[in-house]
Image (cartoon, rainbow, N blue to C red; front, side, top):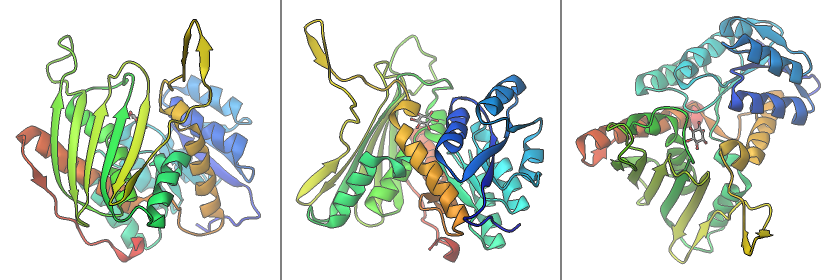
Amino acid sequence: METKTNSQNLSVGVIGTGGMGTRHALNVHRSAGNARVAAVYDLDQDRARQVAGMCGQALVFEDPERLINDPQVDAVMIVSPDDTHTRLTLACLQAGKPVLSEKPLATTVEDAVRVLETEVTLGKRLVSVGFMRRFDPQHMAVKGTVAEGALGRPLLFKGVHRNAVVPYGTTGETILINSAGHDFDSTRWLLSGEVREVYVRGLQSRADLHPDTRDLLLIEMALTNDTLADVEVYVNAGYGYEVTAEVVCQRGSAITTLADDVLVRSAAQRGNPIPKDWLVRFQNAYVLEALEWVESIQEGRPFRGANTWDGYMSMLITGACIESLRSCAVTSLKVPDKPALYQ
Ligand code: ISE
């Protein structure tokens, strides 16, 4: 399938119209002037029809793979449940269509390898992965400051990732697969290294939760370039949604500023509102990510965000973290050679 050129309007299909999928669809519809939402699918067909109406009467499909293979669809956004991402991404590769898969790319290392091997065999980078923090202005400022070199060599990444509450299971494994992938990608991206060793501990934040709950995880990582990382993932923080990223260097540190829009004074108090979830906190990042994805397709160049290799490495780290949490021990992972396609 030939990729569309700059002069044509890219027709995007969106699979999954929950909160995230609706946001991606509206970002394409409202922000990407040279792209349109041509098709949507959701198991909840009423919800799909509602989002289709919000996006200029996009076509509503009853089957995601028919959407992928429809000639009216040039590129696909996969925003369906995590355990569908691999199958649908492979279907996009089979159809030769560019795809932005929401994280995680896969829920097992084996599935991530399947995507990697398929794309390497195809010999063309069609897969982009939705690690949107790479497009967050605050995170990009940290990355740029460290890259300038005035602070000296990066030594340590310190991440905080707090959800007020999460709508899915809160076992350590679920949180590592669904949430912590962002932090693994931030670690690799901000420290420009690969993780070789992890140590994960978890706790149940309240006695009334299921005994399998590990809703607060502390993740320590050692990287191949002699840097370290320390990440807290807490998904029942209750008070709001907060993500911070700090890179500690030899002569200073760079940390994301609070993305505050307003300082509120009332009733003898003053403070800043805390976002309720990631859709609010990372709205700018999602728009910039969607614009870059559309432009990369139309300009026929690699996406500047995360690709299949990043999605695979995040899952490889996730697998090691699951093992470490189970064994209560430091777990090493062998860093594989990066295929030329991703150099
Ligand atoms: C959610 O799917 C996201 O991607 C958010 O960025 C993350 O903070 C949250 O924990 C995930 O459930």
